[in-house]
Every structure is written in structure tokens, then in C-alpha cells.
Image (tube, rainbow, N blue to C red; front, side, top):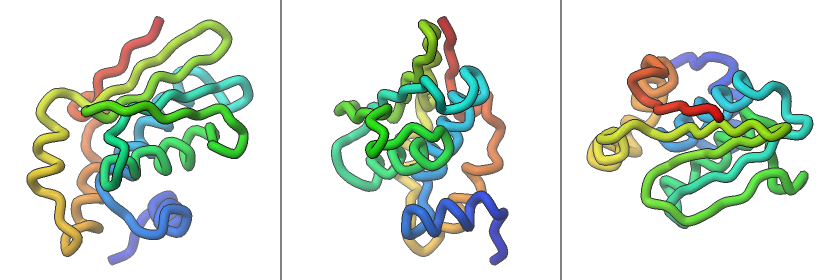
Length: 134
């Protein structure tokens, strides 16, 4: 199955595709769209402290430009994937809408990883995410 170039690059970066790395990719895109390029951008990612949910961190790093190496991303324990982006006093919170984490965890399958990744890559943003800016 041919993948969009962004997903091929993400798979190369992360080592494989999966729903949570796709969710992180989309969250990073949203944060960057709201606050601009990575210069001055920071991200605080909330996730369970182990894979597969922790894979959201790689998706955020890949798409937002916030990386562990630059020290402008941090990870906190949480039950729901969420990212709080900050830049120049502005804050954007991107969280998975209620019910999606349970669906992801219930339906996730290594055998259907690419199919599921494509679904979450193309699902309407407003259906998947709650976004708030202050």
C-alpha cells in the first residue's frame, strides 16, 4: 500500500506506523499551525508512560519541531493523549476528544496498523481533537 510522503517519512523516523504516532503527528501540525514555526515553540505532552500511547511523543516531535534534543519538549504522565503548546505567552491545548482513546485501544491491531494509521491521518480534525487557545 502506497503511503503519503509525510507518512513514509514518519514511518522512517519512528520505525513503524501506528495510531498514536499518527495522533501525535496531527497534534503537532495543529500546534504549529496555531503558533507558527518551532522557533520559541515548546510542547508538553501528556501520555501514559509506555507504548503504544507514548508513541504520540515521536509524532509531536516529527511534526512540531519540538524535540528532546533541543529541550523544548517534555513528557508528563497522563491517561489521555494531550499536548500543550506555548509560544510568546500564547497557549494552545490539543487533546483527543472523549471516547477516541477507548476506541483506539479497543481496535488497535498490528495486522491493521497501516489501514488504521491512514484512517486517523485523514479523519476530520474536528472529530478527533479538542483545540483551545488562550
